[in-house]
Image 1 (cartoon, rainbow, N blue to C red):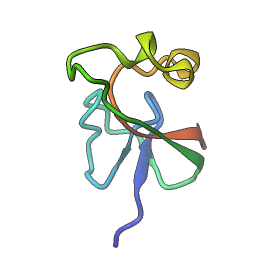
Image 2: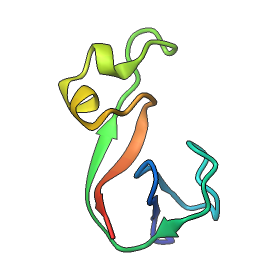
Image 3: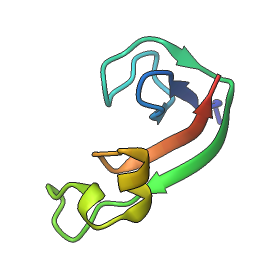
Image 4: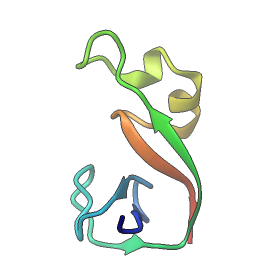
Length: 70
């Protein structure tokens, strides 16, 4: 399995060469910690409304995110 890359702008974790979340290309393999934000009951609902972690990290889409990106 290939190592995930973290976007330096939004911290989204991906295997691709471009971030599918923010369309950025500045990716790093040096990151610490992973948090997974699951979708709510309504898939179009903002996770910040029902998740304390998502609201603190300002994450508006479900997915895997790095806590710290270098």
